[in-house]
Image 1 (tube, helix red, strand yellow):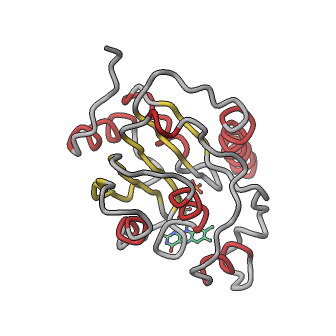
Image 2 (image 1 turned 180 degrees about the vertical axis):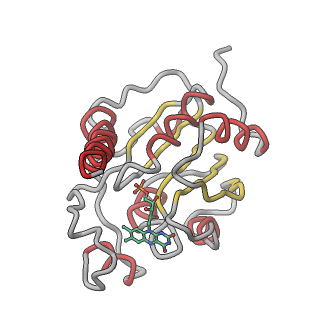
Length: 196
Ligand SMILES: Cc1cc2nc3c(=O)[nH]c(=O)nc-3n(C[C@H](O)[C@H](O)[C@H](O)COP(=O)(O)O)c2cc1C
């Protein structure tokens, strides 16, 4: 049992590293007009973002904080941990490690993240405010331990102007499959990119 737990932990860390080391440093845009941008602190949301990107023929960007979160930072049972301090401060905007230089090329942005205290992490607010998203379609999805999607989308939409077409997002369990993600995106009318 202990061995299984260690293996599961190692796999989880592997996923996190896959994002941190490969995606963030080697973001190589294609001609796609669809971007999937994902922040995943502990690796649950990242595979779902990969499923979305694969189905949509989208570029996949890993959103990361300039100062990485440690385990202690993410220990949200500690009221004073960094993540909780950020979430308790509406004005907190943690700096991004890197930005999407070519944001103009995307018509559609799929934004993925974990729920932190019932809403998107402040880092996602930093991301949304870092770009001119005017005229783009933006859809969000999140994973959580149990909380629903709630006002997550509304809070983010309030940070942008009225020309941004926000589509109501959803919360998914970490066990979501590629087929589930594909079905949801199709239902929401988010079409895969096809080269002309
Ligand atoms: C600071 C913090 C706050 C959280 N708040 C909630 C919450 O309000 N509701 C919930 O169901 N899960 C909460 N979680 C759990 C995460 O949403 C959940 O584990 C998610 O799947 C993590 O995704 P990730 O591995 O991609 O970061 C919280 C986690 C952290 C670190």
